[in-house]
Image (cartoon, rainbow, N blue to C red; front, side):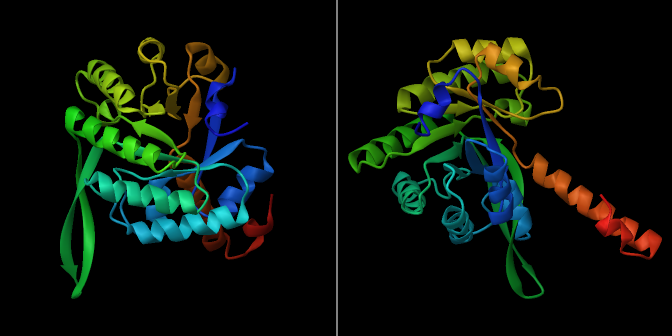
Length: 267
């Protein structure tokens, strides 16, 4: 079953979001059908904020290490494409495809990056995330898809739309408008992070023939119920990574408080 077919199963495809080789290997050992990178987790690992503050070459380095060690289908979070130019976005996708990547996420919001000087070394700081114009983004997406098709690059383009993530007042209306535009532009799937209400999810599912992807949230129901709503893909974002960091901090705290390494070896 190829990656596209995994989005047409009776149960929703559960994506394990990973950030390095060990996390990807664990997902494979546990029997996940596919994995996806978390841009936020990878950025944090290298000391960057999410939002393309990290160089695309660094992302490629991580992807190459994962694909060289793990055989699961890998989809990569390309954020906003690391460019507004469709030609550059396509080149980025081609580089990822050459590394064995079978899918990408591309999002319709962007984080402006500000340059600052810290200790005479140039660094990048992320600022506010905002939705990009839906018509403009759909035209970019259409061009990207046409170019990929022309070059016979078979890669699943999952389009992330962010009205719910950003908490816009008319999130559902904006999401439905964007879904229609992106489907017309050639998207292979739609990702709606932070959508949680059953009625909203079902309305989005019924508005399109494309598979709908939701992301884990505290209010989100169980996987079986999501499949009943029509959801075809579920992902984890950076939440598992963030929980791991909390557990790491808790372990170090125990070592300090007990003045012993016993907590490190306890189950």
